[in-house]
Length: 97
Image (cartoon, rainbow, N blue to C red; front, side, top):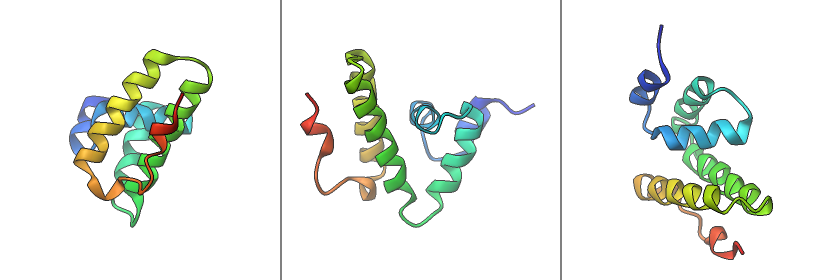
């Protein structure tokens, strides 16, 4: 049986980035890993992943979950450093309250 760790090793994302996709898409982590791999291979796929993480940040902020916001900001920071093509032209996370 293949594990989440195995799937993470097969794609170009961290476990935390995959978990953010799973949260955004309301899907099991193992399915999110496959979806992440698919998106990463698509034109503008990394931009889609970045938007998912930003959406997760906004939802966490809206429900007042400051710790989750902080964690997701770290995930987004790492993601954009690893995938600079996914960096938004406008920094939407800077407008979080």
